[in-house]
Length: 105
Image (cartoon, rainbow, N blue to C red; front, top):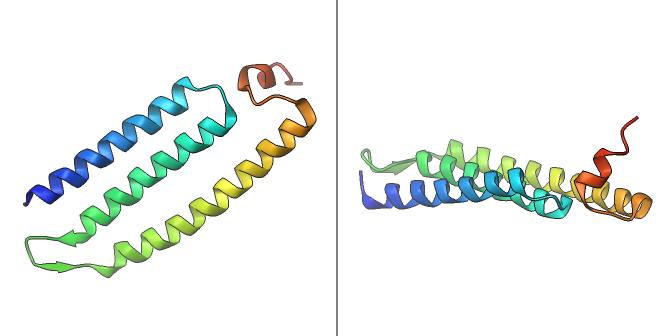
């Protein structure tokens, strides 16, 4: 195991921590969606990292295919989330989730 494995694992852990912090602490809907994107980037980086067999000396193409599909699905999810955010801003004039939670029926 080379030092590259540890670098990618530690950077993935840092991205995971930043994304979880943003999801738990932030109240702005756009910041929450950005934190979700950071979390998903950590997952894709982790998948790419474990797709490389450093001991055997080759790179498995299957995790790369999964990551390409995951990135395209992430882009669709983020687009739909931003559409919901824009719609809720036009309707309620706020992006704060604390104020929107009071609108339950």
